[in-house]
Image (tube, rainbow, N blue to C red; front, side, top):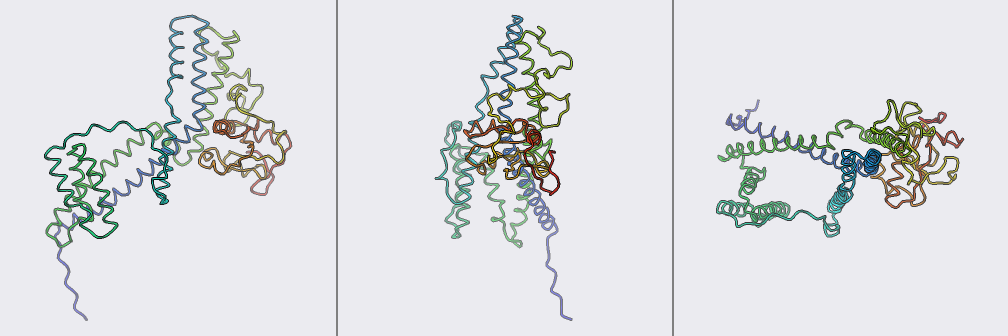
Length: 424
């Protein structure tokens, strides 16, 4: 039996710190991945939410202003005139959200080009940013920390290209903080550099224990900072909205669209009654009124069947959207079906392109250049998509009545299951 090698002696305090640092690193990295993922999900959801539902929000604000103006015109009361002016001002002072989201898209495209190795020189001009704060002469403490950091992190202290690049990137942050005389930021950078894994003394080094303590303090601060950022993201308007359906945001967008269409239908009906002189002076709808008197038997808002108690879409709501009867759609037309997968599987038009509502913007490149006929169940979701496509300069037409109208017209359908096709 061979003699066993002697067990290596380990300082109990150091061993405990090694374990705590390893656990803290794992916790921080996991939290950071979660926060970065949440940020991307919120950005994507906000972009699609604005581009698909933005026209509906704008339409609803415009209808609110028109209703308030109609009430003020009938009553002449100062309070009603004030409300009308405020409603109109809200419409006129809407922020330029298109420019905001265009800048977000440009940043994403630039990031994608850089990751693909094309370099930032191929990126479009960056959006305007607020003026940088005035630079100041760095104080003595900032000068001291800056000199120490440059001395320790200079790229020429290593011959490894990757390490040289890491040091150069770090010093760029150091130079920026120094340019503004930000001693606090420089102190933070110094703590980051001194506690980085690359700066760790060897396990047997007498400096190891002190480094572990500083590393644990730094990780604890980063965990708290990351947790605070996660809470901030979750409490943003889009974060709270996404939290309602984190696993199925497309369905959430559909539900929001239904609610907006229902509200707009009510406002439209109220406005028409006011303009026709059949509206009470107080501006409040009669009990149970949903604007059904002008629905002309249309399918309910949001493709939810034929429940007569649901609000109806008004013909005037999407008057600017090109429409076509299902029976008149050419047999060789390019069709886009924006329903969900289960609806598509139950029954669809053979040869149609299937892109669910929530994926349309991300998959615009898949759409053919020719005239596009858009379908959903009864026409609510497809109307949103057509409105968006028309605004983008695309030739798109909403199939009035959707797949129900297609089925009623006797047009052919197929299913994904091989069973008899039907509209779900």
